[in-house]
Length: 507
Image (cartoon, one colour):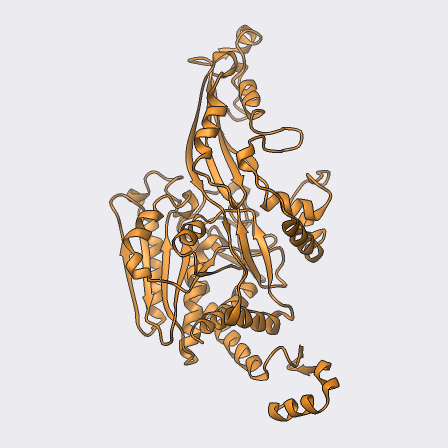
């Protein structure tokens, strides 16, 4: 094993040997697939990754968790509170301690838009990469978190780091910078790297296009764009996201009176605003099946997509449903895993994610309410243009309102989906080798039903760039929900894999 040249001669002399498996460092590899020196390199990178996570990233990420940092859509007074700026200051402070060679950074503010951080790292090899992450967060309800946990309290239990923003997406910037740190410490050439970190992603990145235009010369012409805000259906593989759904959200408002009226007096004469809301939702969604009734929101499900869904289903099996925290009696929309995967990624869906005009059960009196306001969130498949859908939705929901009620639909956020071709060349080889050595399995492509608006923006600007969308997200991380948590071993492993992938751009 210390003489790979001799092994090569043996394989050439005895072709039968080319299929034998050798055991090396407690792993089994096919001799022709993975160079022996690569194993030692990836082990060293993983050791360095473990060190930087334990001694540097986790302490700073824990501070980040303690900052509320609500995205502008959820906190109109974000400027006055200064929490978004505080997350940038914290991250810059951490970056400075890494002592990266050729590093500069600057905070950008355009008028009253949320701030953006740009970090630039001079290349020691050819090529250019743009890394993307965000520091703003979703709201949370502390009362829903488990005992001893809370959204603003970093808690480490076993392999997990709990806290709001731990997985979505506080860790992303740290992981990407760390991958460059371990390359520099290993004297491995890397391309020029730009880190674009925004504070409006959870609001739909509506501030980002202005910054992309203002910073286009700084961002250059990237060979690859890396987004660390995704993951996959297990923690056993390195997952590469090839498709993301788009998003349209807005508020449906129904008003029937100027004030609440005793239900004994008004019930049966004044139509309930909630019943009208139900009727309006029936215009856009079949309540029995969940099918979206707007043709413009659909794409054709090709044989190729169905075949890929079936392949994914063979990998994840029943775990796709079992990992969801449903009540025991609940049945899935489909009992076929491949159909479920297609439904989650290539078909539109609707969720009512908020409501106004409804008092709590404890304080509700016998009153016919004056209004019902519902926050609607539509997920749309890759390839569907979100822009034209806003007026279509508005017309469908507002025209000919039942009983002449006052009805309005006010869109507030929209983003297109994303679909990328598979990786190829040196990048594919590097990520395959690193993944196989660290997990014993090759990387797998997947689709994510969520939305990262940045991906579609960058794909339209840089159609010839490679896209690597991956991350440490996986079963049980509960991003946006109670007990949100980061799987630390996956993040450490992914740091080493990303380092080898970045280095491949300069080869």
